[in-house]
Image (cartoon, rainbow, N blue to C red):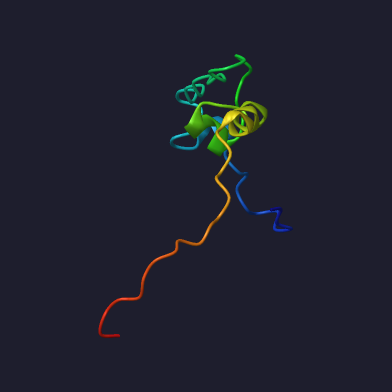
Length: 79
């Protein structure tokens, strides 16, 4: 944002602005995958504690779903 007005005071340096330059922000805690130890970057991966590839491996290891089947039953009396 520049102005063409020569009488305007110069902008203060970034360190002089309140709240800036006083303390550096703390670094985010490094979260690693619980299976392979690689650093996690995505929000969902950080919440799960597992990377996308490792979660896919666990999904494959799960038990297969049983095939759908109709249950044979007698009709209710009175209907």
